Image 1 (tube, rainbow, N blue to C red):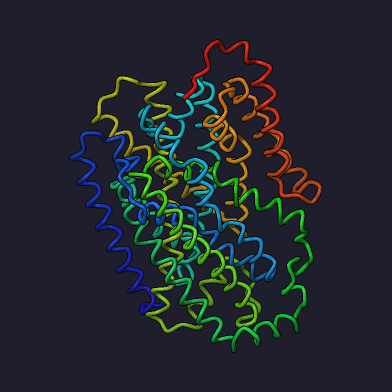
Image 2: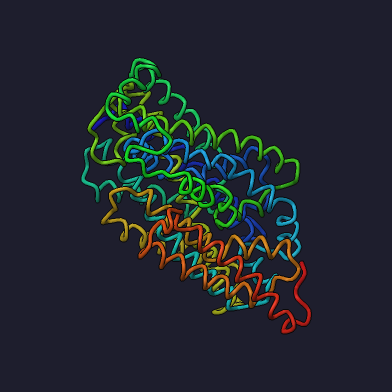
Length: 481
């Protein structure tokens, strides 16, 4: 047990719980439970919006899995990871004002609310709900694994015991506080993520004798570690450029990120969030992946990639400072988990239960269902996380690709900006994108040297446009938002 490390983390969790209980009291007194619980009342300013986007996007794969892959691959993975730098910029600039205005006009609480209003199709609602549940379930599983790995490294507990502790900690404050707790804790967690990244990067660089000495050690081991192509020369320019679709522009299609563009207060806040968020994401993505590469020269021979970041922190930092730094991945993991839990819960309650099962449900019943669904989903994810993969980053990236290629990127963007987009094109695009992605990912991974998401995204775009044009005569008056 690293008690001196655990104490700062425990204090961090106490603050998180306090925010959760405060948010719960606020939500229960609200006149609009759905808006407050799932969107925080659309009252986020620029700093809060930037922090919640950064904290939601920066996850276990950024702080645990990413450094582990960089440790194995070298500087090529740092270059590849920097494709994430403009993620928040793309989301807010492309969705931005128009998405927020339309969401308010139609009183959309969830992303699927927008899709239902735009395309007037129950089939799209159900397909969207299924895709969100399946792929975000996979993504949440990756976050539970990352949190358990971190607690396992700190306490020496077995993996399953660590998983139980992490699950209880997260579920309590997310279930009681909803989106308000998520957004407020994200402000704290995002700040901790940036501070922890900077501290650890400086410490690893000093421990390795400076950048020049670290580079010399890496070159002596394998010159490819400092090349853009990776230790095994597998990072071809084509793969890197297409990977940018997955973690760069394609992020627009991630519902947990896109929903943030519905929840800010005004355009001034949005513009401020673009600047703050881009700087924050750049600092974290560059810093954490560079730490993974430098760590190979400082502590060679770490066999489990997901343990690289915790091992480096515990070995080279004083205990109390290590506790502060390890609050960064804990913050990243918790912030992503809470965002995903709220999104899945809102999908099941608002988009499925209220649309198809009991549209007449009263506010008290909606509150009860929201708490129950969030709890059940959280427990189910814990059960799936009992047998973790070797590197959780691949599970997270699989979920990213599934959501982007299946539907959200084109269904949302074309629905906003192309009047000719209709439900027939959207449904066909969703099905073709989903089926082609799953097929390529499992049977022809990185087909033609490209990331597996590339072909499904291109094909789903072509199908969307062609089918919408061919069926325009079937839609007498498309819903032009």
